[in-house]
Length: 246
Image 1 (cartoon, helix red, strand yellow):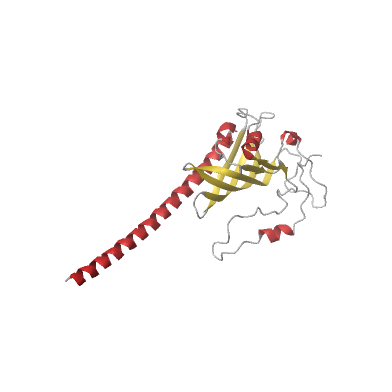
Image 2 (cartoon, one colour):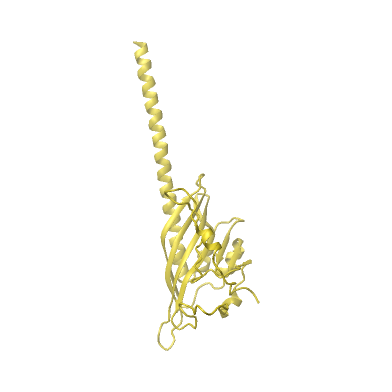
């Protein structure tokens, strides 16, 4: 009789252990989903703050961490002070300014310890400013974000923001949507470049129509292999960045 009870207790203990392992795995999966949702929410909120250039709110989305950086077409701003130098150029934009960049198609990858994450997003939108001749003249834009996030005190924050302007078109701009293929000299540097002060200037112009593929943080989801964008980019004939100081 005692041997029968011992056998039943052993099976019961094994069943409890199995349930505990399954419960632990489910809790981990739920936490992963909650983390991914929190990161997507953080990125989407960044887009809403960007709409009216709410600089302080944008800056407060970044972590207090020495690795913080923000990379734009002109170069990279280092540390929270660099982020403040870029976004803090004005507290609010003029009432006529509208900068809508939708944050879509998220691909979120959590680190093994779940303390960090990387994300890739498309951004589509328009920039509108003061009316000219009673008409709004918007700029249409398509961008890619490659982001890094960090959890601090239980809250997800932006660690690194990297922004690639794929395409921008302004109707009244002298810059053509598709440049003359026979024209090899670099495009002129925009006049507002004097207001830009990255810590590291971008060496090349990777904007459309360069063909540059912004490196992806994730491997191929089926094969597990690294994708071929580095090999492709190495074969491009990129021009020098128009933003480099003269």
